[in-house]
Amino acid sequence: MLKMRAALVGMMHSKTVLSSVYILNTQNGEGEPDLIGVTVGQVGADFVVFNQVGSSAGNLTCMVPISKINAIEY
Image: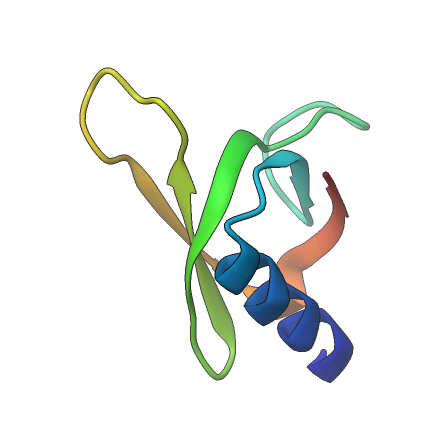
């Protein structure tokens, strides 16, 4: 989890737009991304807050436990 947290902190500082984030145990189908086109807004001790890029509905956010992140594509 420490390597994932460090990577997320780096992505937050560089304002990297993440193409896809895959999260364990969600209702999405197997192999389908759970979050698309997001940036890392905040990294806590054991969670991350993702912000939707270019949202017309305002600043949409999603808090995810770091331990539930399966994969990230950017």
